[in-house]
Length: 257
Image 1 (cartoon, one colour):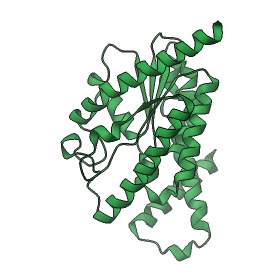
Image 2 (cartoon, rainbow, N blue to C red):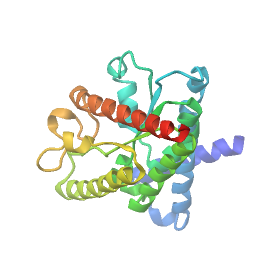
Image 3 (cartoon, rainbow, N blue to C red):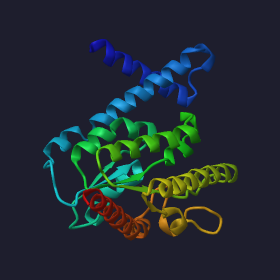
């Protein structure tokens, strides 16, 4: 354990130097990829522990419980905006800032399935797009989303799939590239939801301006919604949850006949 902790500290220190440009990449050569992989493993471990303690305190079954599962957009909604996060509803936020879809797959069992929700709202993919250094392409993103949906189906949990939000405040070339990737993934999510009979929530269309950028009135930083942004998202999510539960109830009724 001692050696493991020292390795993690060393890797984090090296990564800090790399980011700041204080080390020459050629020094590491082929070891650079190893360092990146170890950092991602370390981050995944930290993310797995984020909600473990509080999950143990939650009653095993609560009628109408819905898990909102995602990255910082979900994280901030349920923490920074906690007083406005669906008051009087047994909704639970399980977002982690900076997380990509591969990390979400890793913790889906403990942070969604083990909480026995009536439905799960999945908002995933933003960091896959705007953090290109993670090298998560379209195929991996869609496979990760498919994996989460498959796990939810096996546990008989209705799924609400959400589009990725638009982004803004990037350079023109980055904005063009990110918007193109987001639209490509969103089109796949929409079609996949139809194919699988899932409830689909289109945040993108409600929050994008005419240039496919996140409306300035809905965000201060171009990625995370402000109060007004979450205000747009709330009723869309509610309708998506209602559809998902109704569809699930209808399927259950058909199976019992």
